[in-house]
Image (cartoon, rainbow, N blue to C red; front, side, top):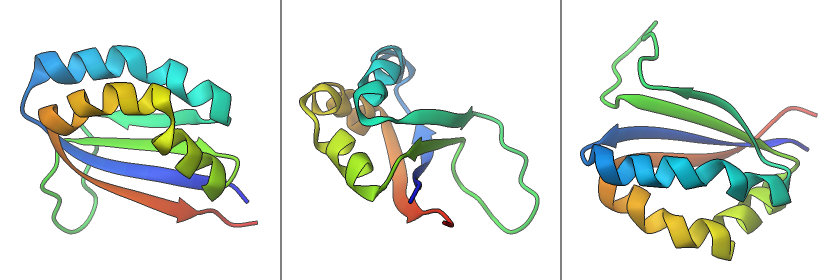
Length: 96
């Protein structure tokens, strides 16, 4: 069943985040990952939101998403994202 990683980010080091972003997309392909949305100006329609960027990534299933997150390719670039931003990252299961 399709799984999604939803990340809400506040970026405080643009240079380091840009380095992460430049290397990010190639890490997805081996795991069937697809970046569905990456928006630095999402329209707040209801409630309160204290971040500035939203990413939505689709994977074939939760196992593929976890394998991607643990992969050597992603782990090699993750320190830049961790140092450059504050984030809430969720793994959610889609509907079958």
